[in-house]
Image 1 (cartoon, helix red, strand yellow):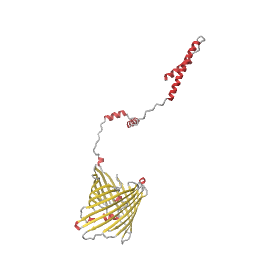
Image 2 (cartoon, one colour):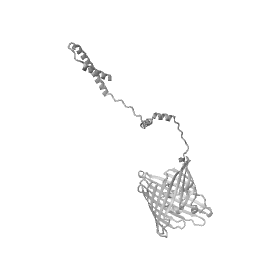
Image 3 (cartoon, one colour):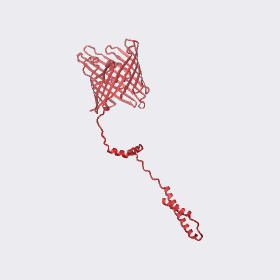
Image 4 (cartoon, helix red, strand yellow):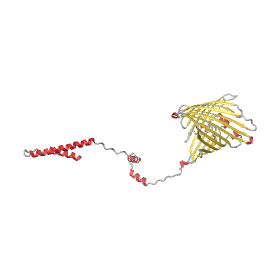
Length: 419
């Protein structure tokens, strides 16, 4: 087609370049001109036909871009000015070795630390012990191997060092059973399992402290846990331990104590949850014919909208304790204690709450009532600040008022470890 363009152009140039001729040569030259003009017309017709074909011919499809991973890597290498040919040759010649051993960083446990400091003011009465470095806790957690894990919590409290918890546990055993061995806070009710700095108020509920010990119920022994379904979700825990509350609860016999806890959980709506549970604890001291029984009932209702769980959360919980000691010298009497606690998370930072306590003293049978409103600010994931007022009334005595400020902070991968 390009050659035809050149032929037409040459013919036109020849016609334009013809010089004038004499009259004798005109017939011959006229025939030549007519012949060339006919050839030019023919070539022009062919040129017009070719142009029409070019105009109506469909455009050729462009090749699809190569979007494979190899092509993208090659394009990135070219953009970076890297010689991909040399890279491929080096990669083909290079031998790669992969070690399966654990390095030093993997051998180290995860370490966290929590500080809990409180300031008190009481009225009426003389002010003393107003500043309390309540507890500093260091936690170590690690996977021992693919089958077992460990948790160890060391407590530095009032100048003394103690192991608050230290146990190993196995999951995925036959029957979907979890097995724990060591020292641990026992699964009695809702809050006993929690570490002190994680509870909704500055102290454990009064009934828990009076019936299970000032620091709650903890012991050294073994624990079996199993979760199962059917009309909800259910958890069964069985524990055999030597309780640290042995002298107060069981007369110091040092014999094994037995605990069974059943918890039932239902999701009522996408935003609401309900759990109801019961606990039984039993221990003896043959030397004084003492048999101690502690029973507990618990409930918890939570409203937490999934779209705003970070900002809104309302929780209502309560526990009932019943303590009975039978011995050869003491007439059996059942003492009751309970509490109801509610918290409302107003937004991402602020939480308001209130708790009511009712307790019969296990020794004097005198009744104590308490009302405890709180205001908590989650400054961040690492820092929690709380203001608390406590109104307390012991039967036959004047009411007392206490104001408290609490600061809890944490470092490490496990912030404000609940348990």
